[in-house]
Length: 210
Ligand code: GRF
Image 1: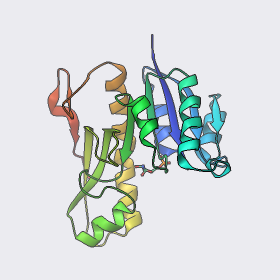
Image 2: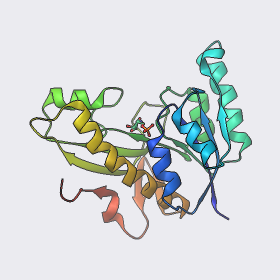
Image 3: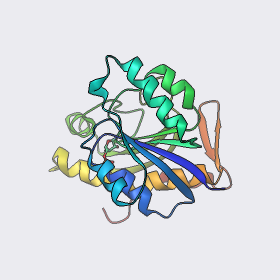
Image 4: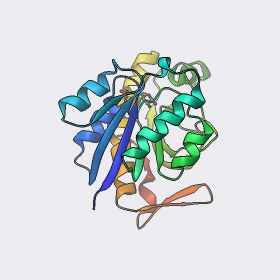
């Protein structure tokens, strides 16, 4: 039986698109967005997937909205919930309900630069290597067990947009990879560390020719 995946997103949805096109052994059973106009939801509809818009602005507070969101996600009986540019902090109750089967992608080499504006902050700090991280979500923001990371060089003349584009290309490689591993049952998540069954060396990606 293939792995049932629910995707949560807020915007453009390029990571979702990369996942949907990667021919993974998964069944994307629903795509849920908190902004009705999200391009990612339109793309889901184009692909004939179940797309659900739940507008957070119509709900009084985070706890109330997240309770509704959790029920909507659970209704699709996911084995895995994938945050693909879901730009709202999730409540502890939501995370607890899906912990261990909730993945996120973050545009930095965690634990460096949790939170927003990662590319601007990387440039401001003068780091020479930047990148992205897929991790399991825990109650602490952008701190859960790391599944895979990819590194990119930072060039002297980079703008934040240049760096974002270079990192995004890697996001589109590592997120499908992480989901494939999860679907294949190859992620061993113990004591806050994730190891890969059979091939522990391949959890970091260094791009060629950049
Ligand atoms: C990505 O940079 C992702 O790392 C971050 O939000 C952005 C979403 O982009 N969490 P997209 O909607 O997948 O194009």
